[in-house]
Length: 340
Image (tube, rainbow, N blue to C red; front, side):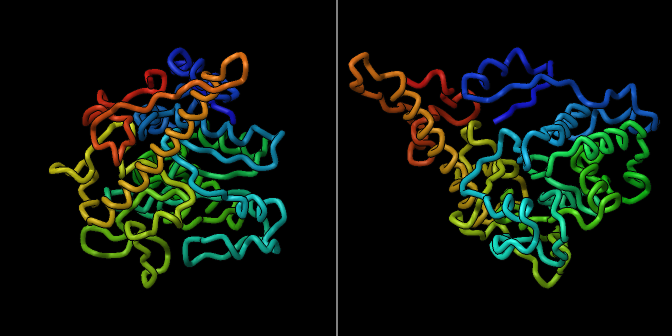
């Protein structure tokens, strides 16, 4: 596992991630705002999305050419099941029998060569973004390529982007984070290199438990209005990758089923709350397994016997948070190094 970290975040994360087994790479943004020739992008990219131009660190995924396939994940994503079928098709081509097991978003053709997978952020349209729909920047799979990295960096450095027209007047990027990854990648694969990427079924790969319809009830998810799949009703056992955006971060210890609904205003559907709770509990189960493994290693005595491993003591909704929350809210979360 490799973690790309901006120099501004190195002090608070480098040592911890190294101890968890990550190979840490400290990198600045591949393009500084001052290098961008386009006036609008130069003046606005630092305010884009969650992280401004720092979001472009994700482009370094393309530089890992020692690997045949690279999966980018944000820290608020959780792999629940293997995704080997994606890698098999990328390596062996669309004739691979694994293609039949990949669930794609409806209404698209399968390319002869797959250089990338991603899931789109249809909720961006719900919140006011415009089509073409951007991607979710927290998960994508790419075939590493120095040439692709250089081209993407050059597109940003050229800065042919406006909020009204998107990238190069294509309409791509008129959404949250559209000035960086969320708008840049669909522009690259839809316009510059069409027919080289697959949009995955967002209910299975990168499940965020989103509402498939806008406030008027129109389908905004996918290209087929007659197939408006509602991810809020997806069985937890079908999800391969959970992404904690609308469901909120597990470590915030929020009472999703309490008197105050902490989810986004489109998520009041009871099935959405149940699925969010199930995804969060899966995260805490993973946290528990990691704790138990680490504590077993720490409690092996010199003669090889194992001393007792103490249980977690957080009393806030232990059936949901498994002892890792002492109270509601971020301050109630029991960090990894504080577990007794």
